[in-house]
Image (tube, rainbow, N blue to C red):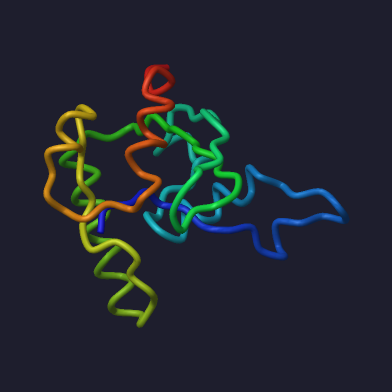
Length: 133
């Protein structure tokens, strides 16, 4: 199933009555792909691109998409994630993604035969202009 890293707010993301969205995004990204968005060695910059409320499927409600520019090549990211995947397995931790796909266009994504989360294509299409920093 093709999807993007993501998750939900948890209690550690709430301070009083305020939800720290940046903390949530960073925590989920770190848990799922081992990228700390505040680590300038790994990430040159990131931004919150869009808030999206899908009309269908499992992902009802608000979604926030963060887009980051990584300081690594595709090959470096592949190796980085492979090492993280091994680490997860060696420590009996949840592996949420078996592999990472690198998509260069929406057309390429549409042509992929893999099942896709219902929100994936509409979400990416709705923010495609924002993917360029």
